[in-house]
Amino acid sequence: MNTPCQGGTYDGSDGAEVPFTSQVYDGSVDPDEHEYGYVHRWSRGGSKGEWTTIDYRITMNTPGKADGSLEGWVNSEKAFEHDGYLFRDRDHAQHACRPSNA
Image 1 (tube, helix red, strand yellow):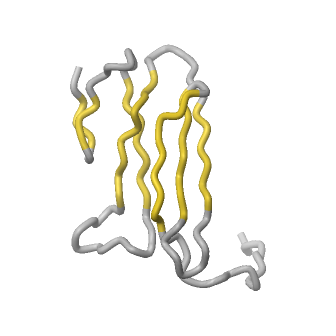
Image 2 (cartoon, one colour):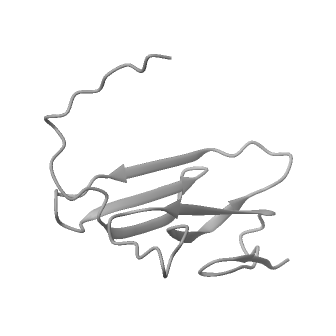
């Protein structure tokens, strides 16, 4: 089975039927080149009709430095790791969250 995914073709070599990907927007994305951000293919997928546990870790970057990272696990096995993200360009710690007036 070959399922097209940006960044390669998922070949199902892990025995899974469903490919997993991460779609990421960061401050370095050129919208003319990557209109929808970056899409990364995971090395493992899931299978139809079976429970799959997905764990995901986002490590924020140092403000102004592209040192953020993403990691992902499928059924406790590392399936994705990528770094060099610029999620924020300045420190937002001084901003408080306010409830919406919904």
